Image (cartoon, rainbow, N blue to C red; front, side, top):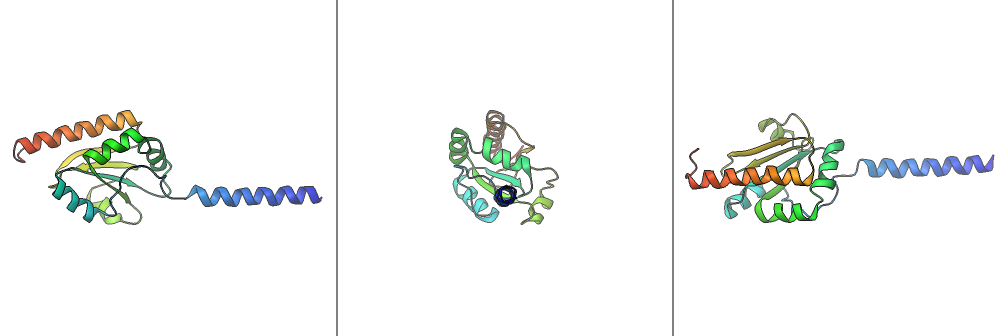
Length: 152
């Protein structure tokens, strides 16, 4: 009886630990996230780098997977930090931004020029190499827009 009680207490303790860590925010990455969209926009205008908006939510399993497996990739994080102004947006905390940019699936990644032109929109999880390819395409479009003086 005593052994069964001890096992039950241990099991309950493990459940509490799992429950506490399951909903913990996005995994830490080496991406230099801006604190909010307004700051990201100012930095983007100042540096000329496109903004990288990554939309997610605490409850979104694939958002956490994107954060840990893709954005957690050291080489990809360096590439993002050198070429973009990244900002992570929680759609539950900031629903208006998601509504304005018509975010309907998570995770959702949107790349905007400093002038807020849409350079890329990607929904769902993808591996680091796929994510890099998508960002490279958005960066190429950004250069083309700059070369034409903003005229598409």
